[in-house]
Image (cartoon, rainbow, N blue to C red; front, side, top):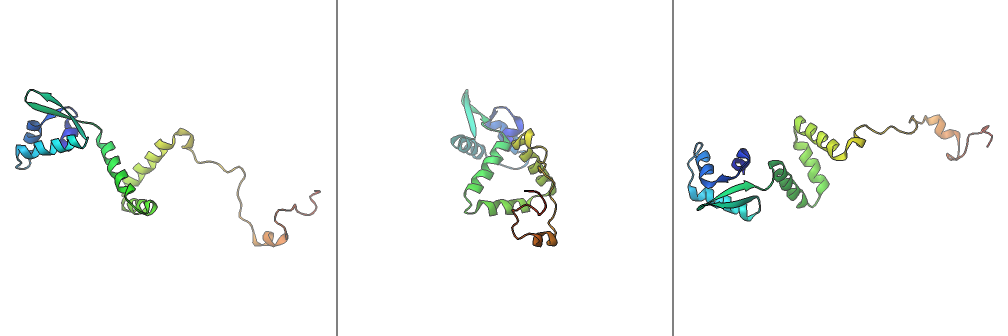
Length: 143
C-alpha cells in the first residue's frame, strides 16, 4: 500500500516491483499476489490495461490507519483501558495531534472552554457549619 499511496495514481505490478527492487530482491509473483490480495480485501481497485492491471488505492493512508485503529479498539473487552494505554504510548507530538483532531471533530463552537455561569469559590469550613439546612436562606435575608 505504501507504494500505491506514494505515487497517488494507478500503478502496475511492474512499477511496484521495480521500485521495491531498488531496496531488496523480490519476485514479480510476490508483488502480484500482494496487490491481488489487497484488491480482494477492498483496499485497491484495479482496471485492466492490456494484459496487465493498474491498481489504485480506494482510500487514503490516514483512512487506512484509522480503520486499523478502530478494528483494534473494537476487539478490546475494555475500550476505555485500551485508550488509556494507547494514550500512554503517545509522544508529546502525537498527543498534540490528538488534541488538534478532537478540536476539529468537535467544531468551532467548542474551541473555547465554557465559562462557568457564576464564579466558583471554595467553601470555608466555618461556612459549612453555619447552617443546619444548606438549602435555606441565611438569617436576616428577609425571606
